[in-house]
Amino acid sequence: MDICSPCTYMCIMIFFFQTCHVQAAVTMYNYQQFRHISAPGWQLGWTWAKKEVIWSMVGAQTTEQGDCSKFKTNPPHCCKRDPTVIDLLPGTPYKDQVANCCKGGVISTFNQDPGNAASSFQISVGLAGTTNKTVKVPKNFTLKTPGPGYTCSRAIVGRPTKFLSSDRRRTTQALMTWSVTCTYSQFLAQKTPTCCVALSSFYNNTIVRCPTCSCGCQNNNTHPGSCVNANSPYLQSAIDGPGKYTGQPLVQCTSHMCPVTVHWHVKLNYKDYWRVKVTITNFNYRMNYTDWNLVVQHPNFNNITKLFSFNYKPLAPYGGRINDSAMFWGMKFYNDLLNQAGPFGNAQTEILLQKDPEIFTFEKGWAFPRRVYFNGDNCVMPPPDAYPWLPNASPLMKKPWTLELLVFWTALATLLAYYV
Image (cartoon, rainbow, N blue to C red; front, side, top):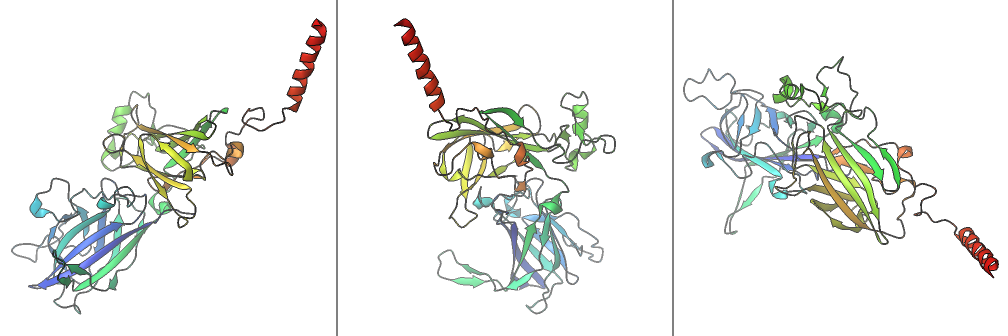
């Protein structure tokens, strides 16, 4: 079961036609609960239906201008038939901004920060037509972040969007509105997983580490530079290598080869509560995870009592009837940035949960999570038969005590008979 809502919704509104130019506003809404678009940001592309050109843009820009040689004076902003649009950076002059723009292409998740879960820009299009009948809908929409993963639908023409005036006494509407829905797939985004889970507990000395080759296998012979040892004298030169500016990951050489690991440790057991420690570790030397988030499924999450150093929000994938999923993320300006691999490349929290007598047990790995997601991607779990199991001689298990009591009283009776 996927508890993610994997859609990014894009709404395009045509406001008016002026001197053969079409003025349009484009807004992208991230309706995904826990997958955001991080730096270096989104890239939106499409193919024009005719020979349209982009005269000007506010709040965004195209990556290329294209061939505008047929325009002798005042060339357009972009003449490419398949433009690629990117967001402007923070600090852009106000005259070049619109609402929800200029964040470097970063869009937050709907759960973490709904106020920043949208991105907008305005565009002036030439050679598009002058009426609703002559304006044609673009096709072949693409959304990259900046890599693959999203598949976009065709543009659907809908009812024109209506707007209320500031005094809420007058309504205006766009001349045309169409929408595009882009759906994310982890399998399209990358060939291998991006995170894995390790497990441990106070009642068993075994530490179940991430499965071997969870995110690929270590092979510097066929793929040189795919990983680097933490104590390598060439560590810094490897980080500054050719892949530094292309976003190519450089992970620490491990048995699992994952950029991120999540360690779930069952720490303490009280009479009415139990305590878990969660550690997120970054093994990627070229990536700082900004506004990261972690989603965990566990049947005891409806009884979270206290959380330390993380933000928390319950998720309701079953319509609110069962609350077994929780979303965690860092506190602003404290640990919302997961630093690159190194001594500071980790974030930790402890969770205090109240026991539910009807379901609580330490047996058969019940205390460990069912699924773990980091930044929306499903993490590789160890096989269930490898979980730290409760030892047979553990005092936490219910066991007969009649024999011990019988031996005690028998020994005591023998000693009394001896001294008497």
